[in-house]
Amino acid sequence: MTWLPWILLIALTVATAWCVAEINRSIRWARRALLRGDATDRPTGYLASALKLNELFLSIESRALTESEIRAAAARRIEALLAPLTDAVLVVDAQDRLRLANPAAITLFGLPEKSGWGSIVPLVKSADFIELVQRVRQEGGGRSTILLNRAPLADVWIQAAGALTDPEGFGEDAAIFVLADVTALKRLQAMERDFITNVSHDLRTPVTILRGYAETLADDHDTMSVADRGRFVQKIVSSVGRLQGLVEGLLALASLESAQSVQREAGALHRAIREVVDAYDARVRAAGVILELSLNADEASPADPVQAHRLVQNLIDNALAHAAGVTLIRISTANLPKGVELCVEDNGGGVPGADLPRLFDRFYRTDKSRQAGGSGLGLSIVRQVAELHGGSATAEPARPRGLKVTVTFPGAA
Image (cartoon, rainbow, N blue to C red; front, side, top):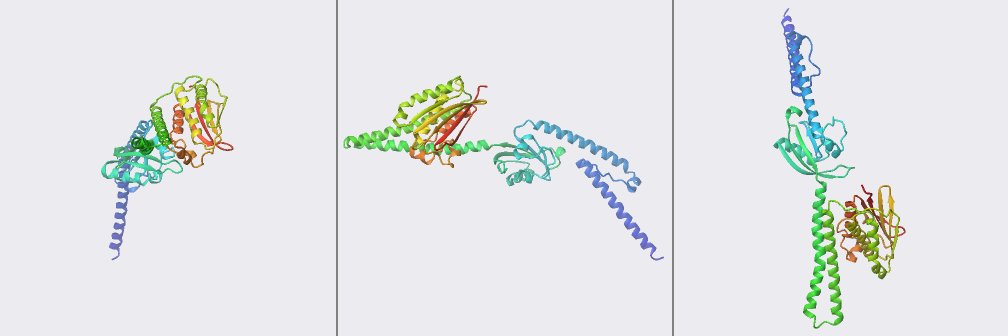
């Protein structure tokens, strides 16, 4: 019977191990239920009954369910508060799971509408944003300007700010982030840099020419021939004209960008077209160009008279100055389902396809317009006037040759 004590020892060891395992399972369940609100798979069995733990488990389960409902209700309230915000808002938990996203965030990142998004890493596709998440956890807050690559959607710049949020709602180390789309601001900053560079260059050129010829005239006036003096004066007049055109273009752009609305008048569009064509009659005849009108839209088409005049003038100037070999400029209007379409088409040399998307950019000039001394502001003004009216401006090759610029004017509201 010497083996009996060993049997009892083994049985006691197995029973103890089983009890310890059951107690550990119960503790893990209680911890999960109390801290995470997950009361599923409640422990049952002989040990729970023998130690009279069932009532305790039921109480913990009830409390966990109540707290889960409270957290769910709090989350719903937070979602309701964040829904109207135009800035994107995200909540990321300690496991880098996306727990909350308002409609603006769903649109920004192209997320599915329902929750359960999983890890934030493949959703935002930005190492800079993940780095910001980690910094917020370490330092309690942070902000950064981030470029989001959203292929196939367009990339955007965002200003992101984050802070640790209430642990009762989303757990320990959960962080909330507010993201503002600053793409337009970044573009404006780039445009400002380009603007300063281009203005400095375009102003310097005629001013340098003016100074050079003026100083030469002042120093050598008595010894110069009449022909040379006349040629120098003509150069000065030409440079002054270029300088005047650039300044007037800048002033026009400034007034358009500061304008909040337009003063629409019935019939102003067609009236502006006829007035500008009459004013350009002598100039186009001298250049051997025919201005052809085909005004088929409603004569009462509304527009701002001053801005419409400016738009038509810049369209004709563009065709005359930059369309090499142009002999015909056709101006036409047509009714749209909700507005009017104005087209200015020439039979000049046209524009290379690579230049078409940028024709309306401020200070952008094709090789031909650089040779002609253009400022690169004319079509930019055209686009500004069109957008101020709520319309648009586009350019495309004309057939069989030349350039066609189309401007749309929405009808009166």
